[in-house]
Image 1 (cartoon, one colour):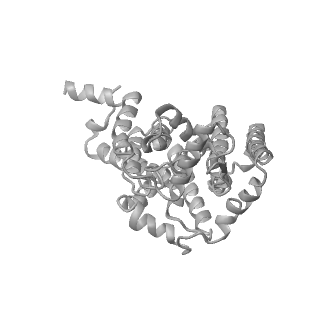
Image 2: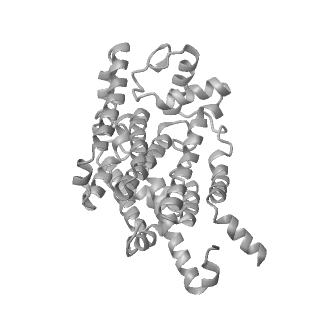
Image 3: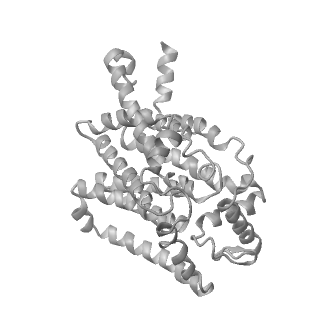
Length: 366
C-alpha cells in the first residue's frame, strides 16, 4: 500500500505526468524518422529550398535551382527552421524533419497541458497524447513523418484554439499574446490555410454569446493590427525584392488550389470516410461516446471545451470539403482536437466508473 500511495503521489505531479506523456509519445514520433527517403513533391521541394537558403544566405526569398521559387509560394517559416537545422546539424533527412518532430512533440505538450491545467483532467491529457500518436492520419507521411507543412500548421492551430478558449472563457490576457503568435505563425507557415480554423472559432463565439464582447476588446484589434503588419509586411517586402511573387501567390494560394482541381477527391464526404475507415479508424468508435459524455457535463469548462473542439473540427472539415482539391492530408489539423475529445471523454468515463465501483481507488492523494 505504501508503494501504491507513493506511486500515485508521483503520478499526480504535473511535471511527472508531462514527462510520462513525452516518453510515451516520443517513440512513434521519433523512431527511424530519417528512414524513408525524401518524398516527392512537396518535401523534396522544401528540402531544396532549405539547402539553397542555408548555403546561399538568401533568407527572405526561398530559391530553387538558383532562382526565386514561384512554384512553392508559401511564406518561409518552415523553410527557415529547416535551413537553421541544416546549419546546426548538417545536411541529412533527419535534420530536414527535425522541426516537424519538435512541432509534433510540442502539439502533444499543448494538448496535455490544456487538459491537465485548464480542464483539470490530466488523465484525459495522457489519453489524448496516446490517441494522437496512434492515429494514422497524424503519424504518417505528409504530416508527422516528413518535413512538410501540415504538422507545423497543426501545432499552430492547437495554439490558436487553446489561446482563444482561455481568453474567451477565462479572460486570460496572456492568452492574447499566444493567440497573436499562433495566427501570425500559422500564416507564415502555410499562407491562407493558417486561417481556416477561424470560422469554427467564430461559430463558437456566436454560440457562447461572446461575439459582441470580443468586438469591444481593444486587444482583439491590437492582435489584428500586429497580424496585418507582420503578414502584409512580409508579402510587400518579398514582392519588392522578388517581383512577380505576389502574382504567383494569387494563382497558387489565394484561390488557385482551393478553387481549381489539383488532384484528389471532390466527394463531399471524402474526409469523413477517411476518418472513419482509414486515418482515425482505431479510435472512431470512441468519438460518439466521448462527445456525449463531454457535452452532457452539467457545467464547467469541459463542456465548453468540447463545444469549441466540435466547432473547430466541423468548421475545418466544411472548409476543406468545399474546396475543388481534396488531398488526404488537408485534414491533419483536426486530429489533435479529435484526440483531445476522445482522450478527455475516455478519462471522464474511466474516472466515473472508478468512482462508482472502486471509490477508494479513485480518490487522489492530498
